[in-house]
Image (cartoon, rainbow, N blue to C red; front, side, top):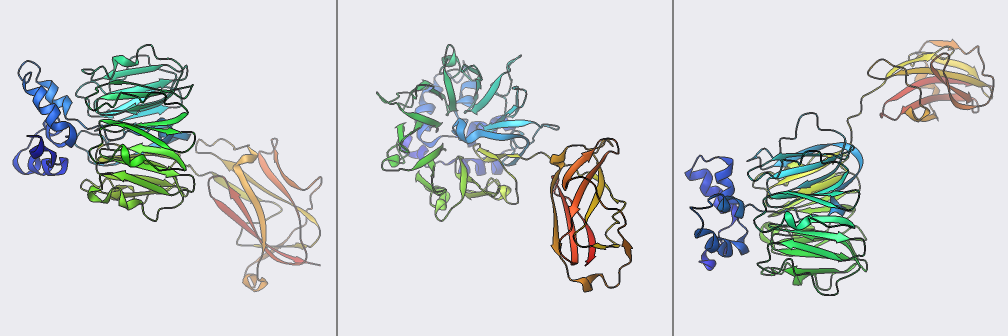
Length: 472
């Protein structure tokens, strides 16, 4: 039976479901999220309890494909979330109004997000309570989604877990202290401690919780379906557990690594030079797609696909695209963190920027359709006001990113009306805010004679300009 079931891929199983049934999300979970190496093992022991504990089969076959260590799941700024790919269970339906997200993780078919207030939001498949966030949970700084269970790392170094617990993957977190990172596999869990050692608990059918004796100096962890990875401070990777596709042994000789991500049956490693290497199963090109990648800052591995976050804030994907888990990332910009579930992706996006209302330019400078004429070598006050979306005056100097003047061809102004600058500035040059008049004032020490365009660039990306023709 093992030989027959090993080639029975989740994708083929899913095609059978779509062709021959109109089942619910829960029934699809029974079939499509098989771990190939665990099917035979799972199938046999589940049969004896199918009638007394029917839910066990459902929980047994849900894939924990994210396996992304906390290091890859962390976001640096409070932001919103985007999700794409398979949506059998609402895993790509980001809750309306979800903002202030600082960390994310994707389980098999569900997601977890940490908010700026230390609370956790969850959505997607909830057949065994994986998104039923414990009441009162707060002080969380990182999360990890497994097959059907969830982990949360608190700021005090303790771990809270919930969801499916038939292998102790939840209860094993009790009493842990001094934890700095967490990771969740199919039915097992990992924790990295402050002393650089690793603790593992849960299902151990392939030795995935047998942490190698003497393993120290670990700085990051990641969990695949039935195996585990640890990144050491010297840039090497250690693995243990299932190795049927070289998931563990393939790490030998890999150096210069700064981050790791374990998927369904393949792994990714981010190197210090911004390139990515992979090993394990190369079905759908989920490993070979790393060739030529540069400028990468974070990685995530799904069941049959891979994701990479680049330094320009874009996301690149490769491998299976059966549910749009690769192509759905195209066009994303400003991304600060990524995570991957079985067949879906997750990303943290920057907060939506609301433009200011610009009032100006104020006297003595005219608006852009008029050329301001003045004398070179004098200092003129350039004034304007800003209001936010509530109508309140913006007062922070940080709202103004820059004020610059660039030489312009005077012929460009030949048909424009002119107005003489009759008021010069007093005091020093530079930008200040006048709280009495509720206006910004930039005292511009004018350059040599010629024509200029002044650009006022705001932190929203808005740019406003004024034109000047200066004579000697």
